[in-house]
Amino acid sequence: MEILAEHIINIQREMPPNVTLVAVTKTRPIELLEEAYSLGLRNFGENRVQEMVDKQPLLPADIKWHQIGHLQTNKVKFIAPFVHLIHSIDSLKLLMEVDRQALKNDRIIDCLLQIYIAREESKFGLDEEEAILMLQSDEFREMKNIRICGLMGMATYTDDDETVRREFASLKSFFDRLKSDYFTEKDYFTHLSMGMSGDYHIAIEQGSTMVRIGTALFGER
Ligand SMILES: *Cc1c(COP(=O)(O)O)cnc(C)c1O
Image (cartoon, rainbow, N blue to C red):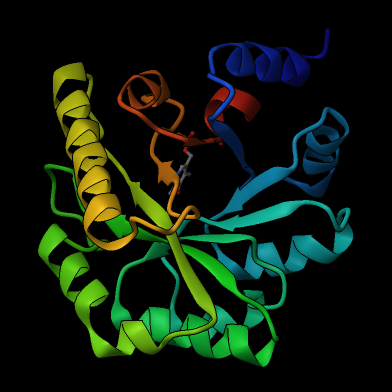
């Protein structure tokens, strides 16, 4: 069997039915995305706007494009017409721009708040307090063209499973808290995007509903 097909089958076998596999296709050539598509994958994740915008028109229209990397405010307009889910909302300013561009495109754009959970200093992500302040703000309440559908987080890059487990567990408990405090009636608040090639087993065990996997599918970049 082709190696990619084998990887897909093996990874999907490990995933409960409520978990979505996002194939991280950054840096991969179009031919590989076509192969992944022909093998049934429909959710593709990119971390650079330019690369997503270049690839999107060359591939079938039913692909769901996930923006997983840091998103600059001035680039939102390029992906607003088609992006399926933005995982990396890390400021109110960015969310307001997504709302504005979604309105222009006459659509509602689904977003996740990126929460900072790792031990090491990371440049991107909100801490819990910042996320709560955002959800309580008047600006947030006035947005009509975005939906916050859940949270995304990246664990510390380490061999220490206990550290990773603790970080994912803290994200899951923050997710549950937001769900009950701010999104009780909102059945779209369901996504917990956590888990990459090196840590998706732990992420799934801790309640992930969406794993973002590149290397384990396609090999080293
Ligand atoms: C690159 C990337 C991934 C996938 O990483 P792998 O280790 O190749 O699975 C997941 N999430 C984000 C945000 C990434 O930038």
